[in-house]
Structure formats: structure tokens, C-alpha cells
Length: 90
Image (tube, rainbow, N blue to C red; front, side, top):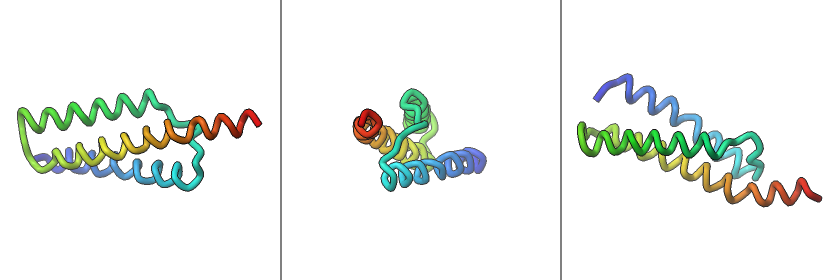
């Protein structure tokens, strides 16, 4: 378990709660990229798989937590996008 890996996951992970909170508060998802979020999810899943198959340690939970937060952010994007488009058309 590397302290640098832990720091990277904690620092990257710190941005997702902010993004999630903003989406929940404003219901505005303009500027978010679903393609980017899917790429990040795949990256975190690769980290989970690496830890599960090759080097299991507690850091796997940080990968899983971050992946879960990005999945939630993507879900909110998909949930609020139709509402946002409806408001724009009016």
C-alpha cells in the first residue's frame, strides 16, 4: 500500500462530493461530460480489479468509493439532463 496512491485517491475523490452536491442543489448538469465520467469509472474499476486480483489491500475500498461517487454523479447527470433540456426549450 503506497501513501502516494492513497493521497491520489483521496485528492481525486474530494472533487466528486462537490460535484454531486452541486447537481443535487441546483439540478443543473451543464458542463459535465458523461464520456469523461465513464472513462473515469472504467479507470477506477481497473484499479479495483488490480487490487482484487494482484495486490489486495485496503486501498481497494478507496477505488470502490470513488467509483461509486462517479457513478452517482453520472446517474444525476442522466436524471437531470432531460429536465434541463426541457427548461431550455421553454
